[in-house]
Image (cartoon, rainbow, N blue to C red; front, side):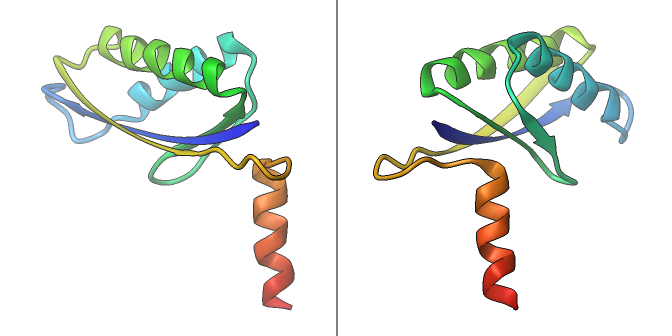
Length: 99
């Protein structure tokens, strides 16, 4: 299982706010049935790599359809092969190091 971080920046919406675009992205992720976590600057999704990449395309399209005339999309993929990888486990591992 891989973890993908996606950040979308809409351009040409006429507003500095883009929470509605992020909501459109979340609906596209939910339609894929993948677990995700919204953060203040990006959204993290976990799942098989092929499903994640298909999800990126759906998210990008959904954001454009929500009213942006231009969209800049950044993705980062963490695909660890030597052991299972989940969002929750990654956060817990860091928290353990803090105590």
